[in-house]
Each structure stands twice: as structure tokens, then as C-alpha cells.
Length: 148
Image (cartoon, rainbow, N blue to C red):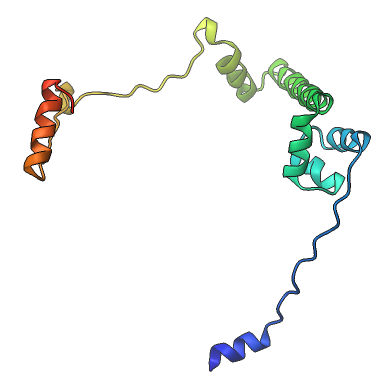
């Protein structure tokens, strides 16, 4: 009884009304891509279309593909320029990042060492629990290299 009362107090949303499909010109899509700095989700919102629809148009159009690549390259150049400014001012985080990404040839590499052995360097132990005689037979053949 209480749940019905709770539901009665809530207002239900009306069903979503689909917008009629509208063809977007190449010029409109180019403007949206430039205005969003190459971020497809934002460009789709600016153009008034779904991400999927814009992404499909980009994949079908060499001109839009090239524009998207160029726009992202410009932003990458912009970010690299600011990174180099920070390196020039002695910003330690920027210097470390630069050396980890661009200084690998000179040995500036972070490594994570993982041990692939058992306790105190002993070989790893493998325990096989056999469930049925058929499974035992298959395991023994496999360990002998006979295959299945």
C-alpha cells in the first residue's frame, strides 16, 4: 500500500520525443570540430547530433578525418609548447615528465621489476587437483607433451 502511495506522489516523465533527423553540411561539421578543439563528443553537441552520428560521418569523410587529425595535432603542439616553457622555468614535475617520455634513449626510464619465482627465489610450484579419472588422463598426457 505504501509503495503505491509513494509512486502516486512522484511525477512520471513524459516519453522522450525524438527530434527529426537533419542532415548537417560539411561546413557545419567542420565548424563544430574546430570549435571543440577536435573533441568529437563536444563537436557533436555543438552540431546538435549524436556522438555516433558524427563519428560515422568523420569515418566516411577523408576531409573531416584530416581536419580532426590536424586539430588534435595543433592542440598537441600547444600543450608541448607549454610543457617546454615549464621545463625552461625549472619546474621539476615538467622536467621529470619530459625526461620520462623523451629521454628514454639516454636512460631516463622508470621500470617496474616483477619477480617470477616462488618463495626465496625457488621455482614456482604447480598444484593440480584431479576431479575425475578422465581429467587425470588428459592432464598426464598434456604434461608428457602428448596433447589431447
